[in-house]
Length: 207
Image (tube, rainbow, N blue to C red; front, side, top):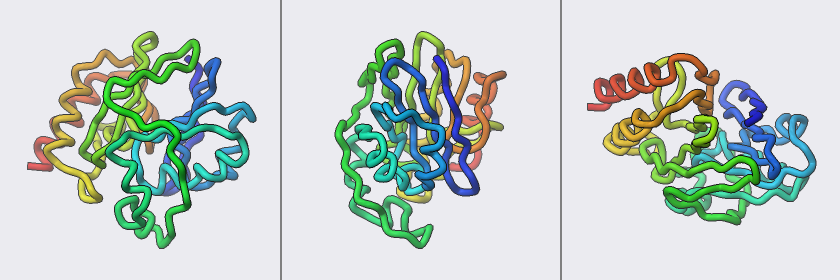
């Protein structure tokens, strides 16, 4: 699976282009103009790992340019009506109008033709946070659930510490070759050790 990382700038999230038969973008960031420079005109789908402004603000601009559909977990859809819950207010912004075309659930499969992504519901950062796992390549996109260096997503913006620990326990059970987080660098070596460190740190810091 070919993944193109459109690295986030400052508070902007990473956006990952999956170059499959049906091209998909995992998260969109804030600056649509910047992200569009790396996208093909035939982008089919934008999969949002959660509802926060720094991951979704660019969606309307990208949709207008490509016609891509938008997917989000059912437990985060309601947040798209709130500047507070979505975190837009933290940036001093209003949340742009955004339509969800596909409501996601745990264990859903997103079929991109030659790539199949399984939706893993990982609440903790937000109620509807998800990770995406490709069993064929053992690649996982983790949004703001877990990052490199033993870090994990904050739980104080509509999140839940207990749910975060449960989600990290779930992820620790997967065989993962590469981890693509919502911020920072991908993890391509020592992934299992990195996940275990994130779980240990969460258990220590959250309770």
